[in-house]
Length: 512
Image (cartoon, rainbow, N blue to C red; front, side, top):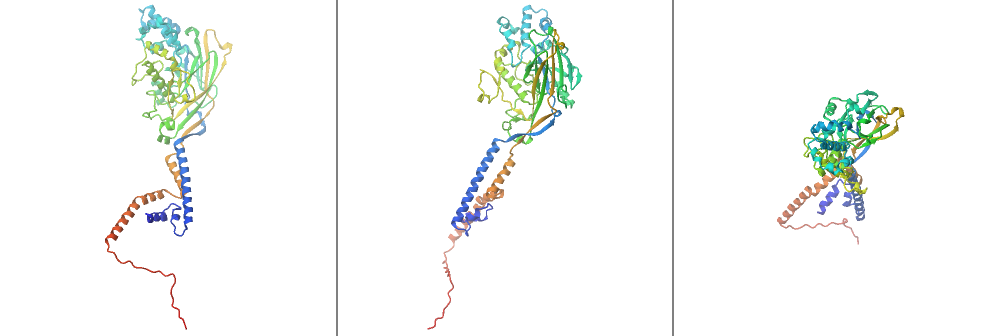
C-alpha cells in the first residue's frame, strides 16, 4: 500500500500532500508539512462545526424590508362594538317570553325565562360571572332543563337592541354613512357585537371577492380620518347598572380578539399602528416549528389549528383552542361565542349546559402559553393552554387608547352617550420580512470556501479522494494480485548482478 499512498500524495490536488512524500525533502521538512496540514485541517473542522451550529440554530431572521410602507397597503381593521347591556330590557320583561314560550306558559316558566336570559345576555368567554345571579339560586336553577328546547342564540338575537337604538351617527373617512349599512351584528367570544369592516359572514366574504376595495382601506392618518361613531342609547332600554362598551380591534378575517372596556359619556380615541410580518417563500423548506409560523395552505401540518372555513390567523387558532377546551370540559360548544360548521362533531350547548360553563368560568378566564410556566408561576388551579403559531403573513394592530369627558351640553339625563374616533397614527408603517438566514446552498458555498481557504481543496478534490479510496484502490490491488500470480508461475531465472562504480578506472602508466 505504501507505493499507492505515495502516488496519491504526489498527484493529489489538495495542497501540501505532495510534500509528505517528496524525495527531495529531508525528513524534518516532511514532518513540518505534516504539522501544517494537521493544523489547517483542525482549523477547517472548527470553523465548519461553528458554521453548522449557526445553520441549525438560527435558520431564519426577520429584518425591516420597508420602513416607509404606505398605510393603504393594509386594510383598516375590523372594529367590534359590544355593549355590556345589549338586550332590549323592556322587551325581555314583556314580549319575548310569550313569543318563545307561548301565551299559555305559566308565570313560573316565564320568570325562569327572564332570569336565565337576563344572565346569559352578558356572557363572554373570559367573564361568566353574570351567570352567577341565576345558578347561585338553586330553586330557579333546578328548573333550567325546561328551557333546553329553546335556541339560546335565536332568543338573544331577537332581544338585541336594534341598530337605530344604538347608533346616532357614523362617519368613515370624513363622510357620513348609514350606521346600519356599514355595521353588521355578529357573534364573537364577547357575544353579539356590532362589527365594522368584517369579512367573517358569508355575505361579507362574497363582497370581498367581488369588491376589490373591500375590506375598506384608508390612505390618511390622524383624528377624523378613519371611523368615527356617535352612540346614544336610551337608558329605558338598558338593564340598570350596566354601562360601557367593549371595543374590539381585529383583522377583518378574524373571528374574535381581546376587547377593551371604554367608558360612557366620554370622547374615546383609539390610534392604531399596524405591524406586518411576511415570510419569504424559501422558508417553506423548513418546518413550521423551526420558522415559527404557518402558511395558510399548510393544513396538514401538526401545528395547524383553525376554525373551519376561516383564513389562518393566530387569533382564529386561539379561538379554535378556546372552543376545544369548552368542548372537552362541557361536551358542547356555545354557539353564542363560537361559529358553527357542518363538519363539527360536537353538539351545541343547551340552556342547562350553561351551568357547566359557569362552573369552569375560572378555567376559561385564563389563557397561558406553553413556555409560560418556565418564567411565570401559575397562581391559577386550571387554565387554557394554547400553542398557536403566527401566520407567515401576520398582521397585528397595536392600539393606544385615550379618553376625555364630554361637555355638559353634550350629555342628556335620559341617554347614555359616547364618541369613538378610531384612526391610524401615521400614514406609514414598518414592514418586516422573514428570510432564510442560511440555505443549504449557502451552507455548501461557505463550506467550500472554508475548505479552499485552509486546504486549497474543492469538490473535485473530494471526488478524487473517493476515487483513490474505492475504484483506484481496487484496480491497484487487482493488478498487484495478477502480477504476483504471474511471478509465482514463471520459472526462476538467475538474477543479474549489476556493479556500480562510483569513479571511472583509467589505466596509469608507470615508468621504472
